[in-house]
Length: 205
Image (cartoon, rainbow, N blue to C red; front, side):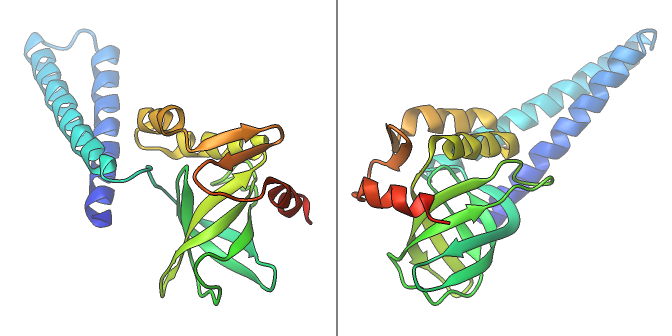
């Protein structure tokens, strides 16, 4: 599934680059013969049709998941009450992320997540509290419990920036509505977690 999805994403990117080039050629060379203009127009139509078909297929695949996952590889710091780890972020979504690494913490452990600023990937820091949803030999899957509003805005910005189809992310943000706002907190409405404890965890150095 992941390989097939990655292939579709890569092909969409290639098609967008080809469309951009063909449109620039068309706009920069107004005096090309009519036959070549017709060929260029036909070529653009073919590219647009292929990208439309791929995007429909891509959206169908996405509908089988709750949230769109954005592939981002960068260091992440995880701080549990009894241990700290450095892992490598594999992918991130509105609901959580997967981090590669070796962790001794069991499922349902609560911890603080620190995704620091980076000039190449995450342009804004994201500080949150999460819970381990699943454990694997290669890493752990995490669900966000909550974060401060500014960091929630940063999360949305980064997801929209790196999304293959930003419209899908915008729909998830507005329609899924898994978070609720409580003064200085943004909390996962599906997880019954003490708000005061969440505040203390987020404020702890």
